[in-house]
Length: 320
View 1 (tube, rainbow, N blue to C red):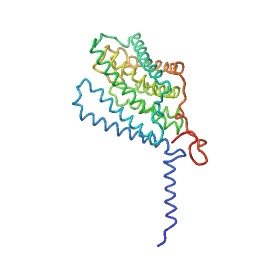
View 2: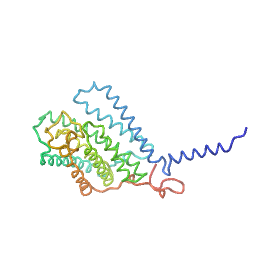
View 3: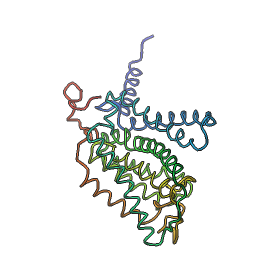
């Protein structure tokens, strides 16, 4: 029997079409790299969270927030490392580079606390929040405050790397930075939908702050300001001021108080992030990033062009 050349041609054509779907001039297409990261990160986070749940009895109940936040952090860090090996780039390439690291990180911590404090001042001034007495003092306040610092360091790394780390870099190289920033910010906001007590203003605020945090990455070239801001804002909400963080209150907090007035002003069960007053505070952060932080370029946030491919098909300036 003779081989049918039409069959061979058809098979070759299917292979070419499949290759065109998955492979571009720079290797695996950015959309598939984005999806691959999400799949790997989700599996790792779910696996580690399941493991922590099985040994939760080892940890005293007050200390369980730490392993519960450390597991997702380790999963996302591992996923970033795996994709960095696939891309043949250092892990620091995806927002963790050393440029202005200490300055940006500490400035982010200060900005997170001060901006949340400004929001609380606005709420108190408009009678949308009624402050109460201190809930913790002395060593109890110091201990719980330190524990929540560690927990929110993990949260800051987890959420920034999961949304604005490798995924934003991968999408930026395919569709450009701002389309990628908007898409990931929508996903960031959508990730809050499952939070008990969340509402539409809180979701919109999460999306808007996602765009601002993406801008900080674009302006500074790293995620260090965003990580510092994220952990400090959450710590100030959850522990220092004792208000709900995206609809999630904590029984262990330093200060106490109750929201008052209409939910659109006070934030209601969402917390300060559900108040309309959060919008001007978030917009103020744009000025802080633009005029306080040093500018540095991140090559990975630029859209890749065919002009970057040499005659041999290799990248001139962007390693794979």
